[in-house]
Length: 288
Image (cartoon, rainbow, N blue to C red):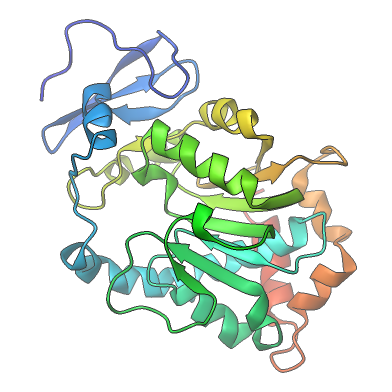
């Protein structure tokens, strides 16, 4: 698909200062100077919203993704969860993994935080046959969940979503969030894509169709009461906080030195010791 002959409006922020970015597997991508987002052709986004699928999230997709999902769950995703627990400004009784895939992260958390296994939940719309048996894993969307959540994570999900899909997801998440609920989002930001991994935009393999700039996410998220909190030095993660009652003061990393006592206690497991607490401190301080 060649680039359109006229400029396209940014589907994320509706800005007009867009320019061609690249053609990947025959699909044209553009980038927005206003919100920095990188996006596949808006016509394709509309087709996806209408039911067209570049990638079919069935067993053929999961066959190529299960190994990497397992490796993330027992590695970097554990670090993201530990980090989010320290950043959170409210006691965490229920923590949600949004777009949990096969749910391996729930298994990893049950292994490394066994005392708290019951407080972790996962939800996935397109699950593979090979998935967790954790009792808190739900097949469905966020709207189908019962109760509200105090914190969570969203690992390698946003880049698969059209702006319309992201808007729906954030609306559903707002309905299920307590005030001050904090979610850590792990996704390739435009700075990461442009400087470190242009191959991250992969429509036909991994299904990556949009790299959302923070300004673009903020514009969508603000409609539902979320504020975007950058993580300095990390071009692949940030936080969303719902209806903050305290306001952000200083760097979010400063929160790790004054965590909510109940949350700090989660990371000091009686059976596994302080491994996850050390991981939380180290990953929060990394890349600064």
